[in-house]
Amino acid sequence: MADVALQPRTARRPIREASRWDLIKANRNYLGFWFMLPAMVFLVLFLAYPLGLGIWISFTDARIGRPGAFVGLENYEWLWGDSIFWLSVFNTLLYTSVASVIKFAIGLYLALLLNENMPFKAMLRALVLIPFIVPTVLSALAFWWIFDSQFSIISWSLKQMGLITDNINFLGDVTWARICVIFANIWRGVPFVAITLLAGLQTVSPSLYEAATLDGATSWQRFRFITYPLLTPIIAVVMTFSVLFTFTDFQLIWAMTRGGPVNATHLMATLSYQRAIIGGVLGEGAAISNAMIPFLLAAIMVSWFGLQRRKWQQGENND
Amino acid sequence: MTDLPTQRLDLKGVLSGSSRTAAADDHSVGMSYLESLPRRLVTLYMPLGIIVVVLLFPFYWMALTAIKPDEQLLDLNTYNPFWTWNPTFKHIYKLLFGSYYPLWLWNTMYVAVCSTVLSIFASVLAAYAIVRLRYRGAQWVGGLIFLSYLVPPSILFIPLATVVFQYGLFDTPFALILTYPTILIPFSTWLLMGYFKTIPFELEECALIDGASRWQILTKIVLPLAIPGLISAFIFCFTLCWNEFIYALTFLTSVQNKTVPVAIVNEFVDGDVYRWGSLMAGALAGSLPLVILYAFFVEHYVSAMTGAVKE
Image 1: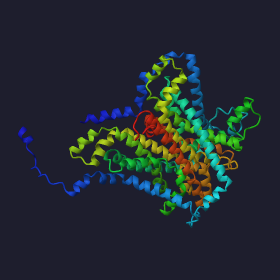
Image 2: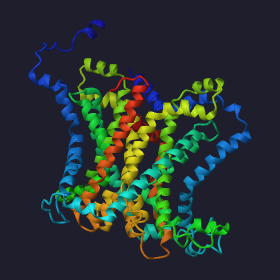
Image 3: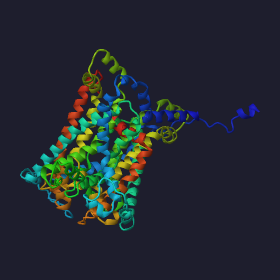
Image 4: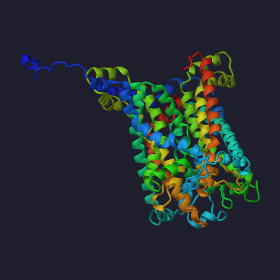
């Protein structure tokens, strides 16, 4: 019985020399090329090519339905003297800086709170993330209704409390409109910051806090000298993402104010949409959106080098 | 051999998030006994309560508006605006049977599923090649893919509109199905690279010695072990698709082709003072599929979010 089982069922094939084809099939670079192909096709056709094309369009006078002729820096020169463009740059910087700072502060605070031991912890964490899940436009519509000029629930509540006598014209007043869109942006961004920082917090060993407490550290010192340094790398990454996505925000503004009142909430992205797609002047719109690139590069550089420095301080090798 | 993968799978499921809280629980009893209940009430529960209420209030308001009768919506003085005793389904009925809403939901779903599947396919291959084939320049390609994640749609939509027009895709679902992967592939490649790195190299070496091809290794060893990662990537990509606005706004013009976010903003916003009920019903119905999906896969969702950031 055992003999039968051990006998080879077919005669063994002679070992052949590895052919050139076999070698190619096992070659890393050759295989790598085929594995990368689908992703590369997408990214080249719909990302790299449009990115280059966008820069080219900004040097032409293209309009919708008509390829433009090369006009050099004319679009940029025109923008240089355009006060609405500069207003949108100012709005974008204001929007990004204020929203990012507050998002970071509240996000970190919320992460610290959620890191405490308490009942229903898992459920609370799940609830907190919901604003981030719901499509921005749809929650922006809810804010539009909450900030309605006549039927705003906030105005109503304040009036009931006797704090104000007339409805606040939330989205019709320049300052209030800015505050409202920034608030909506913070509302949507805080859960992302909080949950990612919470993940970072959970990697910090509790024994460090215990040791520090024994040494007489106050809770502020524990935060400043333990939590903050250990959290810095993840803070840098999270804030880079947050700043980038706030800076290029489009949908929140478009759903709530469309840039109004009197362009007070126009960001560069919404202005470029208005000029390029609604106004039909593709060249100028492309120039506006390309004007965002230097800011984005600056933000990436700052966080990149911040991260490098931190790594070096912690004694890791720079890679 | 058969139970080895399942074991690993468990470990992966644990790593992906659920364990993180469990592991923290072991330690975090730590010093909390030092704080008394009144103190915790002021420093912890009160601020937390306020933040959670602010974060969730818009959804309550959305849901309440969707079921309030019209006359109560605009009359804040005779009725208490924070509650209603006679809910109506008129707005939701109007939404489902008096508009293209079901069609828009279907469009959104169709576009989201197709582009998610396409991008997961492309990024599984790319991530595997970068992490495990390590062809010449793989590091650089990994870095480039990360950079392409940072290219925002608001820079690309103008040139992409002309590209989409040139390819003859304008105002078709394919305009979105083919452009969304540019947002999704960088993200999911980066996420899956992290997952693939945690799969032991020895398993692949064994398979290589047994004569498996790279494709067999990928489909029979790596993918089954990376299922939590795949689910995370899938859910997150799906959410990103559903949320995408500027491409859908630019590339689609006819009413029947629109996706939910664009359609609600463009078609429901008219001069009617009584629009609020159906507008909020639309916003609510558009968010529900994602919230339900999220409720089932919270841990995967969180690990997708944090995983992409941590790398």
